[in-house]
Length: 347
Image: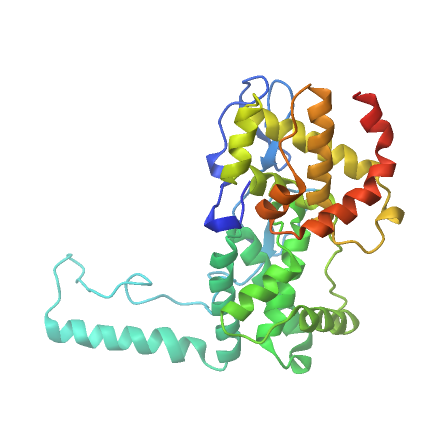
């Protein structure tokens, strides 16, 4: 998985080719990477988006398929036709590969610049700026291309359905990004606050309140609305943020744990704790903070279960995940009474 903490990103491409539990071979199955021996699910298996013309997507198909015109790319303003040479070429050659003279270089460079901007954009300047912002935001958030393309697809679909009712394209693309990351669940564990923050860093007046308000307005117009996050969607990210913290790593090793072993044990315990606490008891609590608190509670339980000293403190957990320490204390106090049977079973 991956983390947005201190510029650290652990990509799924860097996952070990062998299972950490039984050293079995990792294979792709039903949209996930799983162990062929013990069946341990490692991560989501990303598939590059494909374009389908007239064929309906089958239910349960892991391939991320969208509808689009032939030759059209979702994340930029583009269309049919071809570029002069490659998209980013600034130095031209003839059909035999010989370098053109300086006069021809200047001519083709001017033609390519004009063709690649105003002529291709035409009346879609607002869409162009929104999609350019999306590409910049996607890089800052380190989200997968599949999430970015899904965002662009939702954005263009809403424009087709209610173009005359859209007044702010930047705010709309922010709402579409929220919808996309909610669809991908634990594969894109980005919070609403982070989306608003990164748009502000790009120089746009986008706040949490404005995104929520626009999402509610769009729901009445088009029927689109973001799904509500669950704490289990943030489990991979919370674990990644913890094990990427240098102080946490030192304490894990000093307690006699292997990093991958501690990750697996803590992940299972977090999911067990989250499942024990019913939704009625969580109320309107922040799901990300709830997942962080379950990591702290899970660490205390596994320390008793394995006869080792605990790794996490409330202060260290708050520092590693950038969550207020009093929030962790409050959430843990609520869940402690519910998970008492689990805690007693380890004693």
